[in-house]
Length: 382
Image (tube, helix red, strand yellow):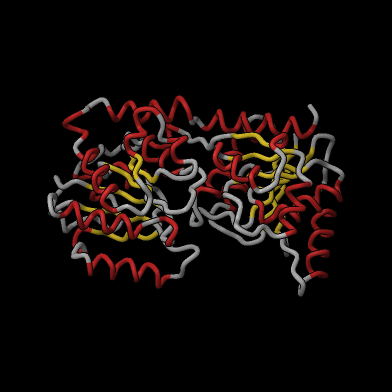
């Protein structure tokens, strides 16, 4: 099988969507499939793609706009000419925003088109995206909730397949020991303001308003009344909002009187070090989070997670781990759930292994790659 993969910006700075795509592509390559990458803007993952892709092409324009008709048509035509297809070639798009280009390319090459839906449908879906998705042979959703949202937006359930994101459990293994002085010292910058025995809470993700970091800061302010030395690690940078939003969060921490309890670490290339330095990880999203890759990353490190009861998150935090769900935007509920979980090391010493087992059993990367592969074969009529 030959996959022509559309990616906007192959960058780890953008979040789980890009990381999941490269995991899938590399996994499919290892299963003997050929990968051709199309991208628009260069990123730090491009070199990784170069290690296994048969060819890589920079695309001039993915989106058709009133002012760039000729540029779009030229980009589509040049890309079609540059790509060599075979009997089992298909176009694979990682987000609905590029689906019109993906469908157009598939039509020019007379091959199937598959789109991976990693976001819920927007309130107003543009005609280009709608046409592109209507033209797809198969659609992949990363959670049942995401699938239901897209079906409610007018797309046929017959095209849909739910394939959960997966994670390589072995990548979460670090030589450092969890919750030790060494683990905390290896965070960048190191935590120097709190005793090393203090509880550590982690947030890893975008610093955008929909991620609910403001709610987390307010919960920390409530918890500080009982745990004055607790520390919150915030790893990430704004993507949708600009840098001023991070400044707003820093100012909010100051207003809440918790500035000495919070470290803004910026983008962290190896978040496993953050998880290993933490007692609890939090995903406080306000929007209908389709899945929540950071939940897998934390639990693969043996760290329990508290997260919003929204979107696809309850499908990930299921069974006994559903007790970590809280009402989105409710700082009091979030503080209560963190409080209940924070001392798990002394109350439930086996929880670390159960977190890892939950991820390993339900969300292994091999299962994700196999699921995507089966959808591709279905689109090809195999």
